[in-house]
Length: 119
Image (tube, rainbow, N blue to C red):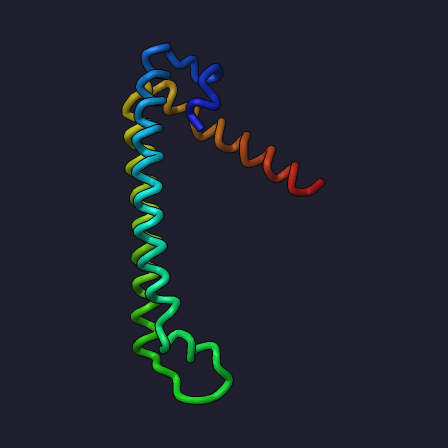
């Protein structure tokens, strides 16, 4: 996102190089994290107790369902925490003025996406 808006943020050449390098490392890390989460979530979704949650009859294993959903929630929290860490790593390479511009740029991106979605 930051690199896509390098002109608006007036990124220096040094900032671009640093962010590109960091971005490559974060991409590799994100791939590994996603694979780990996928393996963990597949275990939960294949659990027999969760499969029974979708049945129309038979016993309901509430504890197994709650435990599996807690694990899923923990995985989702990990995603948010990892994303926040990644954002802070990029943000540390920006000036305070550049960081202050990011919310406005993000809102503009969201507005564009909404307009595209309503067409």
